Image 1 (tube, rainbow, N blue to C red):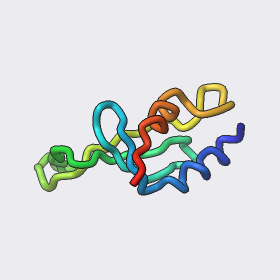
Image 2: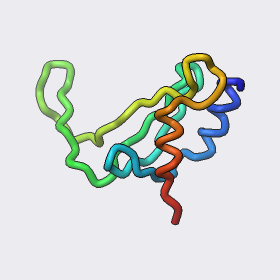
Image 3: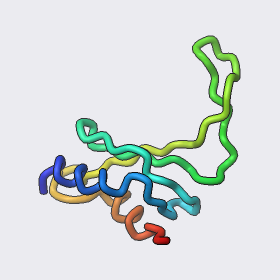
Image 4: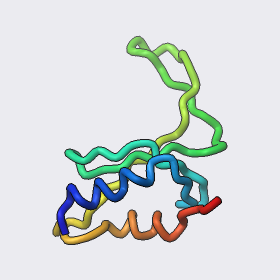
Length: 90
C-alpha cells in the first residue's frame, strides 16, 4: 500500500472527531512527508505553553502525533487502526 495514498485518504478526515486513549480528539493535520497525523484534544485542560525564554504565555490544546503506516509501509499502523475504531459520527 502506498504511503501517499494512505495520507491522502486520511486528509479527507481532517476535522473528524475520534475517541482514542479514553479521550476525545479531532484530526487537525496530516503530514504526508513525515507519514504522521496530528490530533488535538477536545475539552481538555490546555497546558500552558512557554515562549523561547521559558515564560508562560498562553494555553494550547494537547496534541498527539501518530504514525500513519505500519513499519513495512504495507498498511495502516496499529495506532491508526485503533483510532479509526473510535471514529465518532454526528
